[in-house]
Image (cartoon, rainbow, N blue to C red; front, side, top):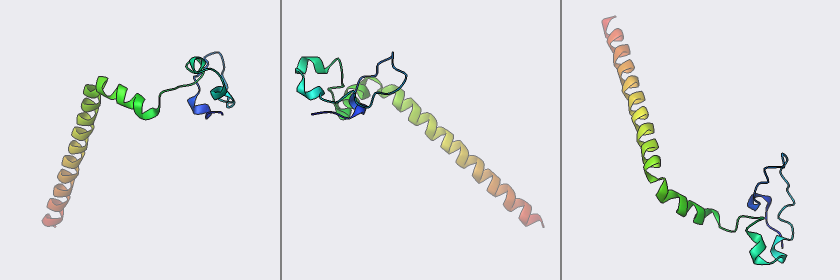
Length: 89
C-alpha cells in the first residue's frame, strides 16, 4: 500500500530524499494523504498548468523557430559563398 517516492512532497528540512516516505501512506485516512504525497496525477497537473502558461510556451516556441531559421539562413549563405569561391578557381 505504498507509493513511489516521486509522489512524495519534498520536505525542505531534509537535504537527502527520503525514498521510504510513500511507504504505507495508502493505509492512512485519505484526508492525511495531501500532506504527505501528491494526490493529483501528472497529466491532470499538466492540464491545469498548460492553459495558464500558454502564451509563455508559444513565445518560447516562436523564439526557438526564429533562431532555427537564422541558422538555416547563415548555413545557406555560407554554402553560396563557398560555391562562389569554387567557381572563381
